[in-house]
Image (cartoon, rainbow, N blue to C red; front, side, top):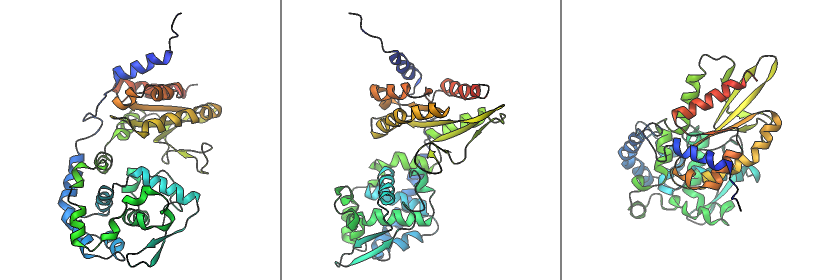
Amino acid sequence: MVKKVDPFDAELEKLKENGSWFWTSSIRSTGSNNALSDLIKTRDQFMKILETETEDSIVNALLKTKESLTEKLVITHLMRATDGSAELLDRVKDYLSFKKIKSLTIQKNDGTDRTYKIQSMGTTFTTKLRNKEILAGNKKLHEDIITILLFGSKIKEFTEFITFKKLNLGQIIGDQKELGKYFESLYIKVSRQESGIATAASGTGPQKVVDDALEKYFSKNNSINRVSTSRIKGIGKDKEGQQFDTVYQVDRKGKSAIFVAIEIAFQETTNSVIERKSKQAVELFKVFKQNGYFLCFVIDGAGYFSRKKATKDIIKNSHQCVTFNKSDLQKLCEFIENLSST
């Protein structure tokens, strides 16, 4: 019996041939070390605030830091100290929105309760909450994030979820001895947060590589323009449309404009991002085809190459799937350019 050949195996092999497999300086700038240096320089300042404030005053104190300890660095310190990821915070935002929770009840160390009114998460801020959005957030969003990272384990609305047990730093604010124990292991250098947030803080990363390539290619083409909101109306449940990593509008003579959504991710190791991107492709591809729009992916890294089924699902359910290789990005640009004449 002749073994059936899967045509998408060949596409996967092309990705593996063109791909980088592991992080390179062109995809992820070593400038992230500068962000790490800033964390080390401001660690004592950050620690002093934790040691001298109380559970009632700590949030405001962290929001009012000056000079070298910026608000962005405060958030980064806290995310490392608590191992509170952007993905977790994004899920919290979705949960608050879905449950229509407007305030949180925090149990204090003396057994009394304090009510915290949510400023932004899940109310005025309902879009995707990634490291980039977290670091660029305003004070209201940062106040919510700081409160959840510090007191998550004591928030009554979350008590049934063991996920939040690790968010307990707020319980030892002002206790120098306990804080010393908490920080015995230098979390800055070993935290899994370092690669994601530091890269975002330095303004570099996979998305910037793709955006720069596309913007340079289309700089003189007035019929192809990047959508500033990265949203496509009519796609997804949000009234403003679903948000993607990058969206381009392609104007066509005598015809209605079409949209191209581009999802971007480099994964050196296997993790949930790969499965999420795969599921997203399967769910959205039919919707895009029905609307006459186009869904593309720029994926790379050994993580994708080892998850063959997930990666082939992305290839099957996209109009273009390329790596960060320059020739591949050129291929993506040409694909989008050709749409203007269809």
